[in-house]
Length: 410
Image 1: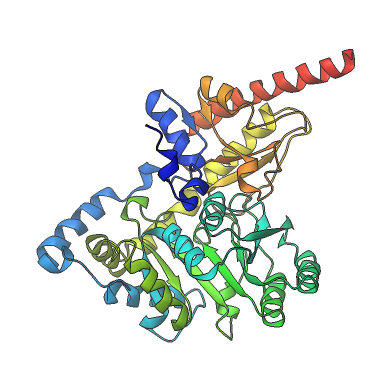
Image 2 (image 1 turned 90 degrees about the vertical axis):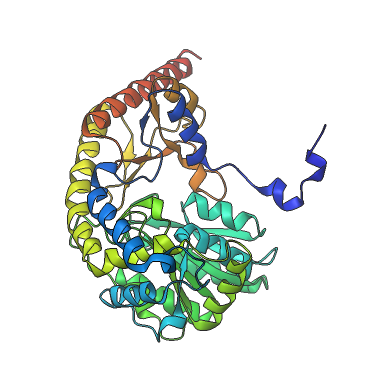
């Protein structure tokens, strides 16, 4: 029976997650994973969370096990507001914050409530692949803005906005990860952040500020969140506990104007009714007992060592004319290989040799960047980092040597 005829147009747009597909390989055989955005499981505070989970059930009993409000647990939202205030983000109150099932759900909801087919969405080039996948379902028109060492090139953005206005197209929002960007690890300068806010005012658009990684910085970087610079409510701020506590809780949050959070709540009601009440109570106690702060002290030091290790082995094993960005935070290194290398074409061979990565074209709205890849350094063990980079280096050098020899022979 042919079932394709029953699927909606929306269903036909859905693409497989690159990361989730790679997980299937890991289940089949031993793979050194540079693919996912996974924290190191050895840093999960398992004992503390076990105590908290037990206490939550005994202390809150049925309250922790029932359906909750779609907006989220009041106590947790209050803790989040206090937490974000420490980073310069101050808003009116509980109506400005909602809990989501990870920040990925927040991105999906925003796609549903903000984008009509043909609306313009502006993203960094490259940008977070799962955001692209979520936005795609609403059929926007994309424009990409390249980056340099100070993040998104705001002069290029300004020229682009002028051209879009001339074409009489409607920009709904700019999606950005301004601090320890995924996949590049770059951080936008404060000067560019302030100019981005000014452009949002001038061209009447929103900014979606995705903030999973600012809590894991390796260098003393001075920055202000876009939301802390926001005076008129144009910035929608997303964040999560997935990278700093454990991803399995699926606790994220949105801080925005009440008109936006109210509409997000209505959309969320038809998706999951509410995020896990049990998880929310655990997150609340993790904040209240100082466990989050404890993790924030541990993670940057631990991941910096892994970053430096991967950088060292990239230098040793990668072919000539390979370049990479030294990330100031987060979990990834973005690598550009010689043009003769197609990382998507070589992924299957890399998997057969026991290593996975994410091909870089996944992060580009135009599927360019075929010679790039994203490597995760937070998840693999130290010895796996050396072994995996050595395997990839050998593979890429073979390809470079073969194709250059073929070119010379021709």
